[in-house]
Image (cartoon, rainbow, N blue to C red):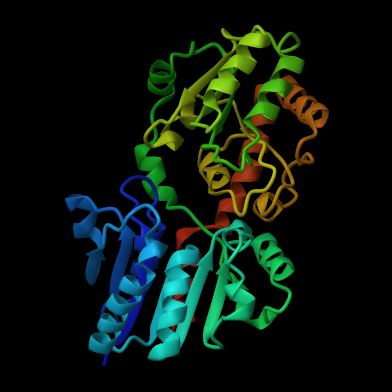
Amino acid sequence: MKQNILHICRYVINSGFDYHKAINDAFPEDEYEVTTVFLRGLLTVERLKEYRGKVICWQLEQQPFRQKFFCVLRVLRLHLQKRFKISICHQYKASAIANMVTKIIRIPRVYSVIHGSTYINKKGRKFVEQQLAENVTIVSVSEATRQELLQYAPRLNPKQCVVIHQAIDVSALEQDKLTFPDACDKLQLEQNEFVFGSVGAENENLDKAHDLMINAFAKIETKAPNSKLIIIGGSVRQQALLQQVENLGLNGKIKLAGLVPKAANYMSAFDVFLLTSRNEPFGKVLLEAMVYKLPIITTTGGGISEIMGDTTKLVQPDDVNALATEMLRIYSLSDEARKELGEKIAKRLEIFNLETFQRNYLALAK
């Protein structure tokens, strides 16, 4: 008899690596039946066909937790029909719903996937230490995030908090790669330019530190002839960043590309990848840069150290001088030395691969 699994996701992912689907695919169809509930959004027809089992899209408002009783009642109805043995929930809202449900009609095992400590470091979100059911286990995306969770919720039982690192589908990303000329053309870059590139949207927490990246580049641009900095990914302070670039007199040297669909595909145009995050719960974009075998300059913020290991020198967050020094060091290397560094870093993909990711999630059901 198949085991029924309830998979509650906060929103759909219609482009790029869909880790929700990757988790669904971890469970063999002959042993498990997965019901996936999306609180927000609609899957495209193409993406829906790729999913196993039943898929439900509730299309709730921007703040679905305001409808928590509606959500709990609907999940309870599903649970009465399916008698789920396991529930996997992503982020705080989905996890809180499953936590309420299991207290009414028990789901034997509930796994709450938390992608960063900010999901509980807010008023009213101390449920992880005050109301967490004993059959709920928190799954952190990095050891750094796990430690932050334990710090913010000191009464949380450490045994109820485990780590499963994220991953990417390397083969899918390789298939979608743009050629170097195409990437340069789409980003309006000259092929003979040396490109420091970054990918990542900056939210209200400003953790990506795009301003730091700009200031560091300003310190070295005269020493790095024919170099450019391009940042792909929008920011809540996009206008302020554009003004910063203008004030530095670097409009021709720094390009803020904003939001670009399938942004990782454009890394073909980069010579070096930059990530200057102050606190990165995991940093999946680093794995994407590894697929392109790029030298990487990044910080010690959050779970980045776990990804990078000892492959390259990391700088402290917000240290603009150290960042500028490392950028100039990598720029000054020979083409062959940069290639060797990129290949060395790329070997970390052997740890953060899709097969390991899915095996770890399957182990939760055993």
